[in-house]
Image 1 (cartoon, rainbow, N blue to C red):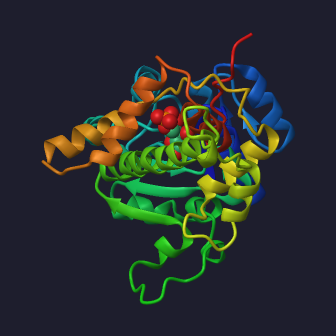
Image 2: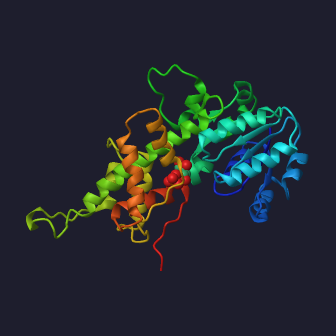
Image 3: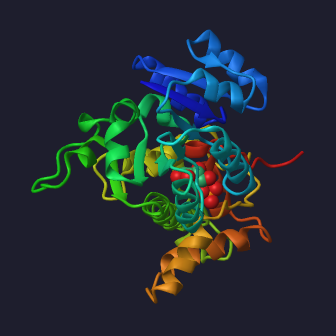
Length: 325
Ligand SMILES: O=C(CO)[C@H](O)[C@H](O)COP(=O)(O)O
């Protein structure tokens, strides 16, 4: 199949690479020409602007926008909406706010265009591991683009079968048609809210282990613990074994005290929106809320837990929060 990709950063560029490897034709655009030129060497068709992308694709076209949520995504979608023809599909694979996706779906429908909001998880590892996709939009459009999704997802063998699972087989491949527009990004928002909570749990536990030799403790209770060895052992057979733990262990193996991190942890929006959603539906979510607030607090203090969070964010998303100087 053909796909246009707008935004060739850490995610967009590797999505193109995974599609090329599966034999799909990709037309690639980024306002910085360098990543397009790189991808052209790997088989993509790089174009200089959005009109050129639209001209290079056959109708009905499919164009995936992979840009930072907010103004950049809005501008690209509005521009493309003015260039595309009825029946074409626009995809937003970024971490957009789900209410924006409902609004954008309605705006594009008025022009006869289709819209899919696709929460895309896999970060910088998606090229080799595949991407978990959470899709919102019309069922026929999701079915039409199925060959692209099949190329992107991790596949059935990436996890052991769940005994008793009898739902849509696409979920066993690593993608879910979550519902109409908004459902894809809502699902990804909650995925990221959970991510905050899991990350924070590791960060707090490791902070306690790190301080087990604190001079504030009675001498006979002080323990000097080896975090790289403990996390490495936990990866095998323990209840908390997980990809987040793998990434944490990797970071600790390279930098046992995580001295390369400032401990100040950023956030991109999903954690805040998760807490907003919990409040709107009167659902208690103390762990997810506390994890968000811990990130705010990290900006005023220099704790080991903040360094663990930064190491994890670097591990899955390539986010850099290194110590300055
Ligand atoms: O979607 C992601 C991981 O699933 C991105 O890495 C996202 O940036 C993580 O959220 P935050 O930047 O708020 O930590």
